Length: 336
Image (tube, rainbow, N blue to C red; front, side, top):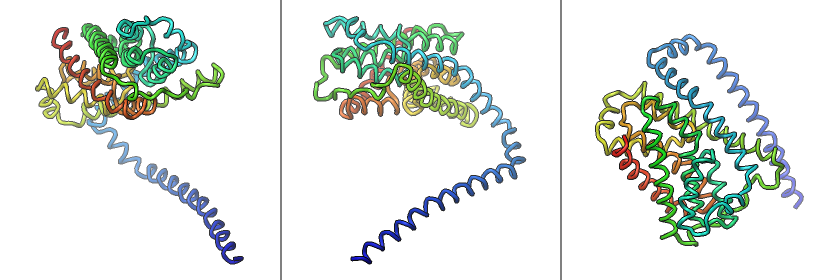
């Protein structure tokens, strides 16, 4: 019995030493990598000076610099609304009839700035406080797509195409209202899980505000960088003929940019600048990129599943994507 007790103790002692060795090894690896960068700075400098890399850096920096002010402003306003505007305000402001509450909630997105990262918890708070789910879902889809920050960023990104702003507003609002009415008609209560209290509950307003700002900046900023990198790569590395082949087909171009919006998961305050850089594609295809992205992408699917349940997300996301693509094509054909 004594031997059996001593053995785990000796094993535990060895295991406690292992993390120190791993930390030491990690430090050595980091130092070796830094030394390697210093030794290879000549080849690295030559690689960065290549025309392809210069073109890549130009597009990347241009997209990030143009989008960053709108991203920061949107995050700040989103945090203000999430923290200082009580969710009960929306419940009082909406009509009692669900059919009328849906378009009112959709239009509310036009005056309440906020990115899609903020719209999901706000919609969850609305449902938790008794707002009809159809209206809450309409707000969830419209707020990140047609708020003043996003529309202003779209106007700046497309200075020669003012109709793009109108087309984005109309298409996004139509999709938001249609999905709200569709949920009211076909949705079932067992598909929608009642959201839990948000993690910011119980904090002071100042702590909740800065916590929301830090969260959104880290997430939205990271996706902006990834989106800018992909846009720059498409612009500088992918052969023009390939992009042109996809862009020449109206159906393929719309589907390609719609799926790209889902994969990139760019914040809505910045996606217009990425779309503007994809100049090989038609305005209608880029409209699909702008309509689909704020409504359903990889991060939004995860957030919707975490807030309302996986069963809800598995039904809501494909329907939203399909309707957003169809409405974008129709509105683009009429307005663009």
